[in-house]
Amino acid sequence: MLALVALASASCKKLLEEIPEYELVGENAIVDQSTALNALNGTYAFLKYEPLASGTYTYAFSFEFAVNAAQMAGLLGGGRRSTFDESLRYHSVVPSDNNLPAFYRQAYRIVNAANNVIHYTQLIPASKINDPVRKQILAEAHFLRGFGHLWLLKYYGYHWDVSSEYGIVVRKEPTNLGNLITGRSNVADSYQAIIQDFEHCIENTAGPSASVFQVSNSTAKAYLAEVLTMRQAPEDLSRIITLADEIIAAGDYKLETTFAEVFNPSNDYKQGRELMFSRALNQEALADILTSTGFFSYRVFHNAVGSGGVVYYPSDNTGDHYITLLEQDERYVHTWDSVTVTIGNPPEMKHNLSFVKVWRANANCPSYLMRLAQVYLMKAEAMLNTNAPVKDVLAILNIFRERSGNVLYVESQFAGVDGRHTLREALVNEYVLELGVENASEFLAMVRNKDQGGSRMIGRFNIHFSTDASLALPIPHDEVVLNKGAVIQNPLVLE
Image (tube, rainbow, N blue to C red; front, side):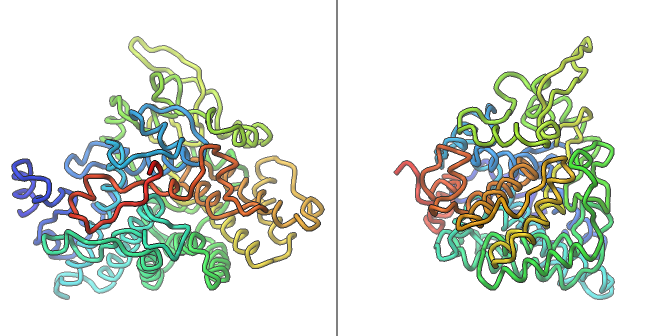
């Protein structure tokens, strides 16, 4: 097959002459219903596996998507990915950092795999695929392409500035030698491409999915709401509220009764609960994680399992705003707590700090790509931005304060000329306390929301933030070189 031949000879080619392995696909791989379904499943699999070793877990997406943003937000300390972890906290990542390309390339693997599913599934003769199945496959592939592009925009594009030229490389066709070198779209066009893919999925799906590992109609609506929340165009606000109401009314997912129950291991990955979208780990992956010394939630989120500086903990060098919030909130003990684990040979019981939202003794650590709680908070934010009554916004925030055992907000706390600014601070705090270190939503909320003086709220959580340019990671140096100048680098913070 083309992919195998190209990969076998890649080591003999110079960098500028080769197609990266994540851009390759066999032309005849998708020829009927069965192979199309297999290819779609393979696209989902890029959320967890290395492409050339399907049983080997990769942290390139399912680990980094949450941790990198949490460090930029000022929520995490620790880690030992060379200088990368520290650079994220200090907003000083450089294009040549060897840890930078992994997430970038894994996101484009998702995009390119989805493009192949879309392109070749459309070409399958009617005699070899049922029309409803074709429609479903195409809908899910469009979602996954939008999903990949969305994460690229979150991390590498100027997502906060719709007028910026620094969008992402939008790919809507299978990559080949003819279209490999492609320039970046602007931010407005990047948003539009993502929105179109999510809308396609919404229009061509109905009802719940079979599991949290597969996109549903409501999940696609949740991601569309997230894109619109990031873009913040005037026409987006009412649609965010409508989408949230539709998701809640559909009843496919429901909030857990307490914050602790969200992260109770017995509820992990259950369909029809609060978790809307995640990724699956099979037994081969779990075995690989347990025996590996690499970076994964099992090691980096438990101080007794990880070694030395590999482990993360609440940040101690980006200011004390986050830890102060945590210490005053009942969610603290269900976010960070000491957990006993039996490890080693001979087995030994150890007790130390753990990020209990995620850490699991069996290594099947959940990935909270989308929770229903985020849908509620996006609705509250849209209501705040459309000057809804304070009591209506508080009604949503208090859902989460009540179920976590915190004192409820009252309207009088947000009275006076500064009341709505104080309410915005409370909203961002809820993103942090409810969704922190889960899926970058807290980081994005800090970026797009500003305080009374017009400063981005991320500055309160991370004292090292000083310029908007540091809110987007640089494009990996090799990617810029490979594209022969077509991909323009983000303005660098150190310049």
